[in-house]
Length: 172
Image (cartoon, rainbow, N blue to C red; front, side, top):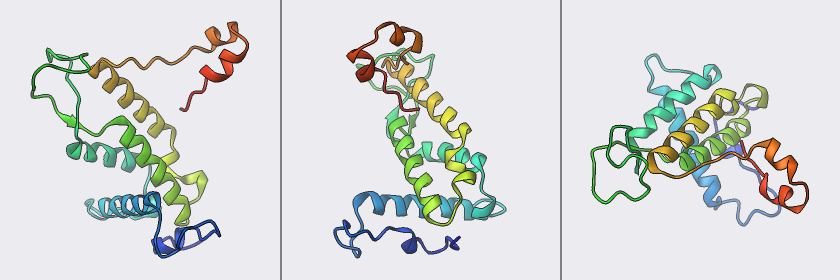
């Protein structure tokens, strides 16, 4: 198990890499996200060593990031609640979009393991994180009037055939 201190050691050097000195956009973003999360842990009082990080720290980090969000999420009392394209501005808060958080967790999950973390103890792979992301997605969908309907397994088993294989792919 590596020490996990040097992020440069965590990237792969496969023969398909374009240029080891120039990481891909994904690798660069993953490195930035990893450094940001590490800085967040260091700024906690008291500072949290990565080895003691758990899913609660990850959830706090995701909530902290909301202050930098750009997605308007209408509150239930807002007259624009449930409208995908409101006709006027309102005072509802800006939040991180669900898709951004989902992608961030994917990058941090990979970075954790690339930097010496065990897949079995990966705080980014916790069930609590999946539940949080699902709740954010559903809340934002309702607030913006965008239907996110999960397909029921009982309904899809009734329609066997080509439709089932193409319409029941769920990533949770």
